[in-house]
Amino acid sequence: MPDEPVCSLVELLDLENIELNIYRGTNRDIGTGRIYGGQALAQSLVAARRTVEADWSAHSLHGYFILEGDLSLPVVYFVDRLRDGRSYATRRVTGIQNGAAIFNMSASFHRREEGVSHQMEMPSVPPPDAFRPELETIREHAEEIPRALRGVLTQDRPLDIRAVDAVDPFDPKPGVPRQMYWIRTNGRIEGGTTDHQAVLAYASDFGLLGAALRPHGLTFRDPRVMVASLDHALWFHRPFRADAWLLYVVDSPASGLGRGFSRGTFFTREGELVASVAQEGVVRMRRSEPGTGVDGSDGS
Image (tube, rainbow, N blue to C red; front, top):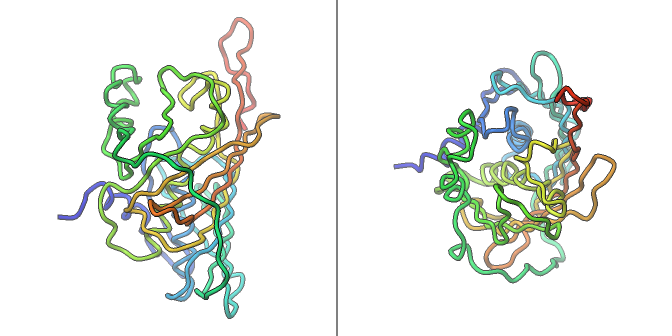
């Protein structure tokens, strides 16, 4: 019997073709109150991939989050075929809701070839079996989660995420701006390269800006902080499987002026560097008007 959690994720990323170069995707609520950025990124990748030759695969994506996505509405993706060369093809994808662009992405695809090769070393960390799934910890603290979010945050997940250097989301302490996770799907992916790349794109938005919050003892669930992705870049270096353990190493070199910057690398258990990520996002402390309790931020 197919693994239900991972099948639900692959189905989420399997877009409906509604016209030439036009696709439609549904949404999954992960408890943020808006469309998860990794979903928009992954669905845009799938839309772009549908318009290139079968033996080509993505090597880089660069996306901008323009507006907050509405979970109650599907997203329609328009693909522009910018260039088809002998070795590279370029696509631009725009995600639309209510007639407005909520996400824009450029993607480049490459016909595989051989070349010189090198990589940085993977950090030495204990294996994934040495750590608990994040979902177990969340379920143990279910009573501390607001009732409106409890069902969503404790639901079965398509990804098994295990923090190497976990931050207690219910009692965070300031630390170095770095986090590491073992991550894989909860079940086998039956599809090919596109499915594995799309799932990794989906996973790559997880926890990135958390590294920018860590030095300040903050987390995404802290009501004092507003966090939102602004842009996201992803490079695929080597083939991989998203249903096998990958070590996601994330650090934040800098934050300031209401923004945080983070970058990440994905390694296989054997130490192969298979993908790199970079992201900047809003990291803003909420302000309340004196005596009103009303948030005084501008909402951008």
